[in-house]
Image: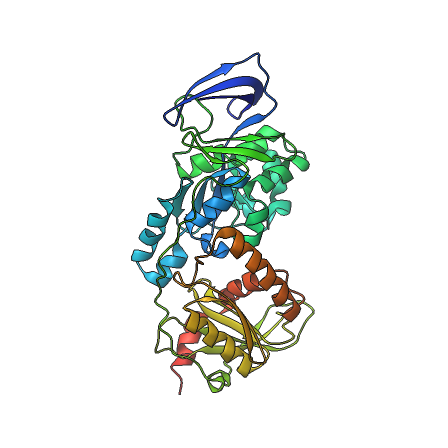
Length: 411
């Protein structure tokens, strides 16, 4: 197979008309070519670090959405499914990932630095600097200073956002901020591949043919994606949706409103909204009582918002205005063996997450649409939150788990 176009060489910082020859999934030749194709040939993008459970998509469904944006590989933490299912959890994810042409690797948790001073300190220790949508602006000076030390990563990514774009959006954003296109592309290809020692092609002879064709270097509109020389995207993913067998250890008894009456402490998220709400954390272990606290700063105006993947223990978390709505939301999650839920005056709206309480079995496009609709409804409950479910998933980090265990043992 031969591919013609303008090749972006991330190794020599050059751009030239080329013919790329591919045999049995490997690039066997790259030749300068007088025939100047209209399209640009780039190495496929790599997500340098993500929490795949934040998308609620198992690897195969994640891949079907990501390849349309030129992503050929992703590195994810497997901490969520390890915490919920134990040692069998990561193997469960790997088994699903093997069914997907996209390349997945799983790793330990990486720090995401939010300030330039933190990142510079890590820089001095030769740590990789992950540039994500949330820290892009403060860390932009490092990207301009030495893009070879930075790698693009999605970190926590909503499924509806993945439908719109992926690492390609970070590359485009960097170019818009004045980064040379080849340097921005390097942060999405060479840097993550070297950092994680991945078997991902980088547009060299002898490399796996992991490459993409884009319309231009400003929009980065992806027209074709190849992995191991196989065309996996052209006007739509070219491999089927894989269904995972539901699996869970969410053996938690249903809760009554009375179990949420006793509050043990307070969480203050800051901000202007000091409206007090109730927040409860329910362990996946069946014999532990809920930890219930008062919380300010979340800005919930009515009902309850709950999820079954609150970091870092991946327990059930729910914020509510009343104990009745709180119990209804928690019980809906328990009955569904995991999910994202809204509850108000006896009515609930839920997206089930039957795979370890983390992942959905829906096709990516359908989950993205349903998540977008549920997020809009959740913002009506909590108007100050852009992504109420993602915010809720992070709040557990404000809790003292030793304190929680002590509180649970008090009479």
